[in-house]
Length: 303
Image (cartoon, rainbow, N blue to C red; front, side, top):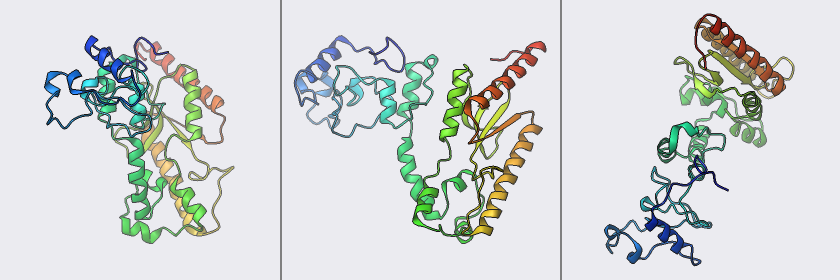
């Protein structure tokens, strides 16, 4: 059942549009309004935008989602099975925005429409960027680290994958939203902590996994392989020397990131992917409470 308001509720339709939506759902196969039921300004036979006032179909591609998805007069935005327009949550899914995307109810419907309608679909970006990275001869992880080498130099320096299985594994390596990251975020949310994710701090080149801006706490969830875990870290036998240099460079970059943030007054917490998410969240919670307590003692306000 839809909520009365919020990202899972449709916009309120006018009496005229309610009649139009009910007509579209009165019989199977009705996806377009006849001219007689359209507003006068849309009855011109030369009008090419026939999708206006239209109904979506379950088995057909959806129309491009625009900022007007809450109005049937701005596109084919009537729900396939219900006499209403799309909810912000449904429109976000059609744009392939992930369900964990924060649709803050305080922002209001207009703000959601702007974000969703103007977004480049993330899934489209993935399908465009991954072949590009593959053509450049790099991996998702290397692209994330902001390598300064030219594409030609990177191709020369990077050894080929030892097998097709390894190549596919490297190609599909997630840069963000890994299972350990999602587990820690869920544990933090359970403690009623609000935070930002995948942010650049103070103009830095590398994004931080979880950020508490007010408390100035930066959190990283490091993969055991890419960041050289002393317990679970491994070095591939194939192209061993290259990997030794690569992983040492990763660890050096992590140390430099820590030092840069700490010099600017940030508290940096790092957890390995094998760390228990609940225990890590407990540590973060204690740190946040300590910082807030100190700020309150000094007469400062925190969220």
